[in-house]
Picture: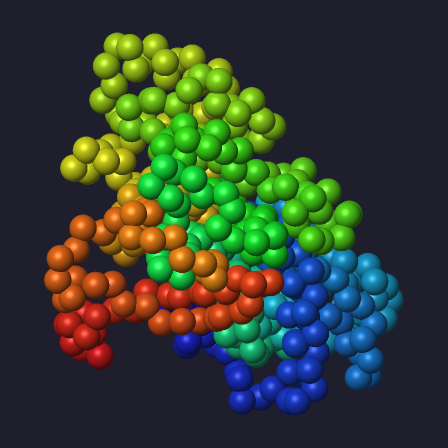
Length: 403
């Protein structure tokens, strides 16, 4: 993902001025930020450490949107000891009134003498303004320390701010021979309990889950995070399931059953259909609107415009991270249109045979059409293997780009 333009040449970016102690404290701030991994969306994950005389006097992290930010918790923890201290924060302190007051003002009022940010905030409402206000108050300011690690905390937030799109992960499970279900549609269970628990945690870090209506018709799926499968502490699990991801069903012609389970669940469900419905479909859309949000989308070659939908999710619904859990056709569309940032594949050590259903439907016939990926991670989950890969540009694309 490209860095925002102001990061590389900002007046606050002074990587060479940082000491080993600075790095130590920023690393601690990054560790704190991870404490909000499943709960901060649509806000970014942020950690803050306040240090005075080489001693931590205050710590904090952002836990949930609408609640105090990391800096506020750290200032409260430090109390009067914040006076003359250095504050290390993984993201530039905000400078605007949102659900909470500006954090830059809180740091100024606390009397800190120095603020070190891992990176500037790409949010146009901030974008250097927070650090500038702190500097104008006579406080030493720097940014760019462990920026790559800080960016890795918030790929979805950064992509939404920098590109007006959510970060998209496609998740599928398959056998060793690349099959997802038997010819009859039977698919429970390809993977084991450990892999299924990992998927629940993947859902938990997502702002929205996208599926196709065929999956709803066949499985009557709920698309929810299930507490008993998370494998996390009870308190955290309770907070996670209290704010479920938005359920998004792509249903061009509104064939979803009116009795579908997900229409009666707590939380938000979005049904995405064609913007050219007939009279009968319009009547059904009005009925569904009582149970869900119905979005009428433009079509491309008879299918919902996925790029348009992602823009709407990012802009209107503040979705930073999207998880696609669907069949071979819809997953193939996301991949073929180059809309995928990460591809998660769970591989079970079993063979299902040539008659079983394939992983993705791309319709390619030549090797030159094949999509290329690079592996980012591989881990065993019980007897299953989880692979995470990222799409890479072809040699032709790189040549055209002058790389």
